[in-house]
Image (cartoon, rainbow, N blue to C red):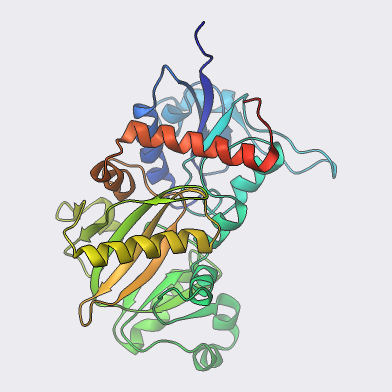
Length: 358
């Protein structure tokens, strides 16, 4: 008797500025999923927040079936009572969220899934929120004794009402520095500031994306990344390196510049590899992460000191993304990686609830 295929809801799109990257990630994941084990249930979210659960959500979102959009859309509505939560999900056994950025990677969708009682792939509410908010992420890392660059935080209200005071009290790092939205991804809204006169414009740009901005010491060095996989006992991949020719690894360097290279794995001293892997696991545990993450580092040219840049709880799964490439270099192919992530999501749900019926 053949086993029933698990129904996997692949969730993509969303209202964040990383909508298009989410579509690319979802396409890549759905292409490698084992169709004998899984029945794929695509779930799309438009840029306006409309949920597409019928027809072909992927084609609808990329504009190939616009005529179907009004017929298939559903919207999450406000709670009508204190005890009723509309469930926007079709019948699925587990959800694979591939929503990058706010309203997807920040704990909001994870909270909805928790309330709906649906297992899902990846980090929980707390880890997702910490992983998205660079200010709190760095504070947690620093409290845990993990190496982070000097940083400061300015809120938009402070900037708009008392600019001079905001500069005086925030402990801004010396120039050069990076100005970035506290919540965001794909290098959206990030500026490298070399001269003081550039700072106001950089802040205005970052405040387009968030109410809170991080000003971070610019580390001149190499950008190294490790992928993490697991729940209570995470595995860490071999490290890789981002090699780019622009001023920094911005959106264009990530997705548009053909000169950008991803070296996976990168040849490093074995002791340094072990150090990076240990820091990756420590960062993963520091925010109580689960399932998957990619940890980004700076390796300073001057003294080879390592700094943790950030942790990404829903890393990219596009054809050029480092997360699957590093696991392939470590010995886990893309299809096997997706299968492991689904199983880790189900295991986490079972361990939390004691439910064994899936």
